[in-house]
Length: 86
Length: 118
Image (tube, rainbow over all chains, first blue to last red; front, side, top):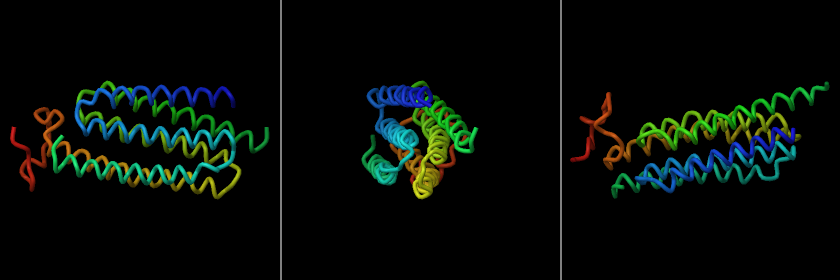
């Protein structure tokens, strides 16, 4: 199981690195919103893997809060871009 | 091999395939050329990867309530990600970002709001 967990975290970190490069490069605001969305999904995935390692769900309320906040943030910034332009 | 071992192996397979899908999503986000094709990478493979990881974790946690919370988050992602992608797509269309000239089908062109000038 240890090898599986290490592989999971390394893979998630690699994916987060790729997403971060896109987040920094841009070039437009919608690109950055999409990257932040994926980054938040990777955070949720990391918390879920941590819960799977320990076989307990102390952090799972954080998971629900992050998922909700991510959706609200995405919709808000998308509306903002629609009105103001990128 | 007890039932718990079987569940652990199944959960490991689910976790690893979910991580593989997440890495593919990251690669697509980095390599694809414009906002609309990047949205394709950001929504489909990453949601499927997250769903696999969440079900893998749900198989391993002790408490049934925790497993229910994990599944709830997965269902919530399946509801919200398409809505968010729709909002981002429409706003980037109206803001004029993305490769608008390469679109094969453009149903928004004649509708309310329409295509931005220039």
